[in-house]
Image (tube, rainbow, N blue to C red; front, top):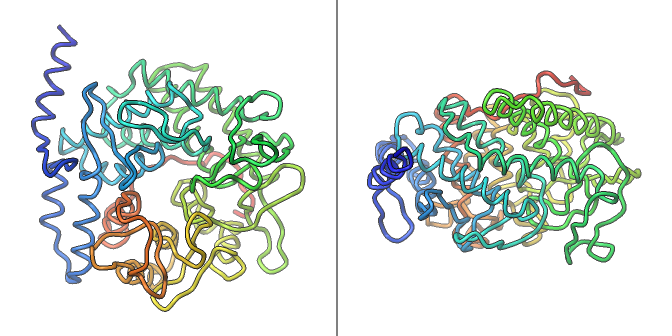
Length: 436
């Protein structure tokens, strides 16, 4: 009988979600927020409306009661992208049951993905592995989404046996990859050294094969992903302790979190003559480090947004000055915008994701306004943000349809521009940091 009512509730909620033009979902609270948005800058208003509705155009409910969000013009769902794409809808989850149902459906589907293969980063609607690039952030994003949804709504119904299994697979994988050479059998043809990746030393951090750009790591301790893992493991500790009342798994998450944090602070901070101590992008635990940043999130620039550190932290401030300079090999300047790009796209092209992170992490209003002008200037005429663009000619861009930056832009407008309280991500206030 309980199962019957659960199915009935899902049907009722699904009926509240009107299907329009293929993939599009009409979520009433989101639609009303978009339609009713008023802004003296009409260009900003148009871009906000398009951005806020973009996720609903990528999402659908599946027959098994879960929800699926494709990344855009690629017919697959990335754990990272999907978690970020639905994040702004947390603003509406308490007032609209259909929005809450969508978020619960995403969390439930991501749990199944983690059960199927915690080393895969993208899946299809029918649960086939689309791409098996092991990216540490793909394990962290579902943890932070589940914790954020629970924190915003107070809805503990997400704590199902499936989610418990998925999170346990993620935790087991993180623990295994702490000592990748000894414990892991993961290989991928795009990795160096015959598909195994370059040698690494033990650091307490978690080995990862790929960056959030889906490009192979040069060195396999990717500091931005380690930062996100520290936050996510804190979220997982709370979920296990207070959601599932499993003190053993909560302690495992806490122990791993502390070891990763110690690894970041010991191996991930490098002295530079021009900037002082900065966070490296990648290290190998053997003395090698890669000083750069990539636009994809987690990035070094995004550390405060992720909840890892404060914008006022000295090491972060030093790092930020380096990242937003020509000394960062992926920082590009043009007549319309200047910002961080990626080896994943054309040399010299800026990513809106990085501009948004620059704005989110800025402590200066004039810099936040400059970022907003550059984002509006990147519009090629469709009122959407794209993967990357020529900073001197925004009509040249990559990815016609890319949901992630549009979702992030709607969050930026709601919080930075309009002053809504920021969405929760977790905290590291109980940990020690250099440079505070």
